[in-house]
Amino acid sequence: MLESLRKDSLRIFKECLKAADPEEAIHRFVHISEDYLFVEPDIKIDLHNFDRVFVIGAGKASAPMARALESILGGKITRGLISVKHGHGLNLARIRVTEAGHPIPDSSGLKATSEMINLLQPLGANDLVFSCISGGGSALLPSPADGVTLEDKQMITCLLIESGADIHEINTVRKHLSASKGGRLMRYAYPAQVISLILSDVVGDDPSLVASGPFAPDNTTFEDSIDVIEKYKLEASAPPSVMNHLRRGISGEAPETPKPLDKIFSKATNLIIGSNLLSLEAGKKLAQSLGYNCMILSSLIEGDTTQAALFHAAISRELANSNNPLGLPACVLSGGETTVRVEGNGFGGRNQHFVLSLLEKINQVPGCVVLSAGSDGTDGPTDAAGAIADTNSFSRAAQIGLAPDFYLANFNSYHFFEQLGDLLFTGPTLTNVMDIRLILVGN
Image (tube, rainbow, N blue to C red; front, side, top):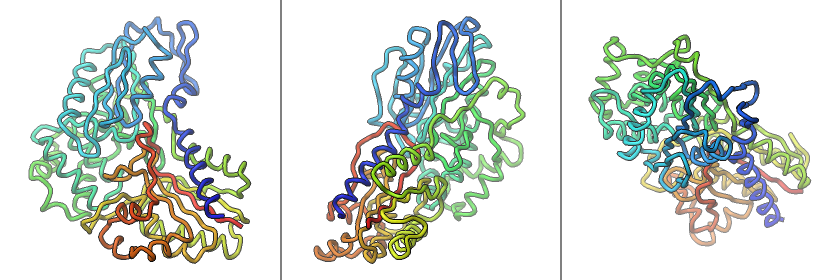
């Protein structure tokens, strides 16, 4: 039975990924008829009103998004520029794609962002810009504020990630150390018309948080940024230039990010075209067709990875013991993005850590399979998307001398599942809608 459950879990996960396909998402929302461009749900654009059309963007999924726009607009595109993670590039006809560092920004991303700003600055009211934005765009659009170096941004990004700060908190700081994020690219583009097509990788699908919202108004402040750094006790370890810039912002010496009432946003549209929930709904539909009683627990799960894992383990035991909240066979899906405060010297990602954290608990649940993976095909700094485990994984580990507690304490989930043969590899999926988790419990 476990082998069948494992196969089903992989099928369901792949169906979730398929629903997050960025090109299909663009084609669902954008189409053209003669010289009218339609963007769902209610935008109709007469292309005769625009002299030029540009396509720019950043994120792990932005290259296939741009390819879809090329297939729709063809020769109407004047030119474009897309910044993607290394290994996620595509060769396009009219839009140049550059590769850069992620999650830590690098000089290639800095160069691409500078070129993007130079492209936007001369635009006028008769120009139309499509912006392809997806998860990962924050790191791929680095443009340090005055007095802050790229190395400084790299250091504070590493410190925040390792501290356990969530993506909302990390992006709050990033926006206030940047000349491109938090709506600042819209300042360069104005008065051109900008339509941002966004594949969301953040809980709640707030456009201002995806890739730190380069074309979206920002409600956070310099004070909020300082609060994040103080919350995680990073004042002493943060680069002095970072703290100086944030303090200058609080005193009014550095400009705030543009806010919702700024006139520049009268020319901006930010549209979510793909999300974690849409992927979970596709997985649920397939699971039901395979005979499972199915529910989506939530697409908004965040917070500590270990606590989230223990909660999911409790659900698996409840399913097996009392057929609650579903009768068997059951499939429970969830999504979102949890955080791990790294304290050991091991190697792994939050999805692998999630599965390892509940391994001993599901050992007590007959006929149980758990899968957790990143929809982008990578989990933390590893080449695995995540991990899969079942009722027998704990005992299999013991047979070859693997102690889960030892690997958990050292945050070394990758090497644990590598030896067990339970790492999940997809390669780059060219999409990103956060994490996909599922529990299957058979009869």
